[in-house]
Image (cartoon, rainbow, N blue to C red; front, side):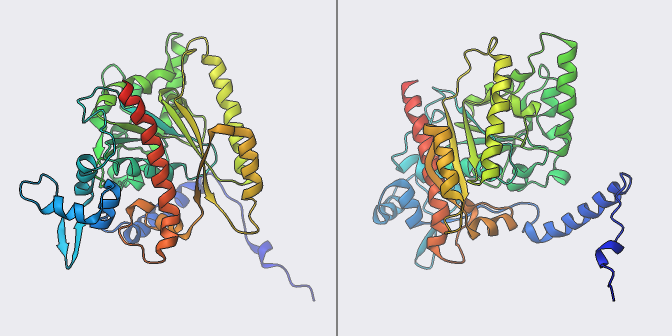
Length: 398
């Protein structure tokens, strides 16, 4: 007897009209999940640091830290004693790094002698850790005492969510870069900057309505031959360079008009790249499209330079069956010195963090193997140190 497959009995027809009901259903499910993801909702909580961790960040021993923390007249935070362990908040930790470490002073602490730098995280491939890398870059640089502004240019608003802001409930169109895009002469980006749960990191959030910029910008360009749409964000960020050591842009996974603005505003570019064949091919497509764009601007933007372009291998699988070794060799051949020697391994630490809309920097105490945790945390620390030391030299020369 022939049994009719159950798969053939399902009507899989989807109408455009049914998408609205489907979207509402997903929104309801998402709201339910947020009750578990964000605790307390909607704000996230920053980590705390032990005296051992703070001493390591400052490059001093723990005994020296305890002496400086408790001596009469000290301007350094004393933290709080929990039993025999002294703990420090994120803000207190940053003050220690700024005042007691060997990290070179930032332009802000030197009364704005040099402009802050604009970095963009860009990749057309979804799942490349682009947004997570943007957040980790901001957090890691802040732990070196720097003040960082994140700018979310992706209508998906994933970076906004990582900052602890519920994009569709807490953010409106007027909270994003859109008002500036619509009227750059009458609007300041500084007015939409929001503080985050992370001391030293602010954000200009995103909202799904950002997608409307993809209609507004070409419409304006068609009306005026003098409308240099690719310079909008660059001009808007210029005043903020005196207020932040770093401005980190997170772009959409496409060559949108906002992404083009980000690329033309940035001083340096970071491309997180998962060492898998499709991701590598996607990166090649990125540079092909980027070069086409650059060719159209070269007569006008001929002096546009990037301080560096850095390919950061992410989610690297070191298993025996992994294709990472082969693809890594492709990346090395293709990108040469652009390829960073620092790699971020694939890890359950990152997967578990994603469930809590968190990064590896958000963890105060890892419930698991410390070795596993350090495998992910250390590469990000090293990468942020490399970026910061690269620019510290330029600040000294300014």
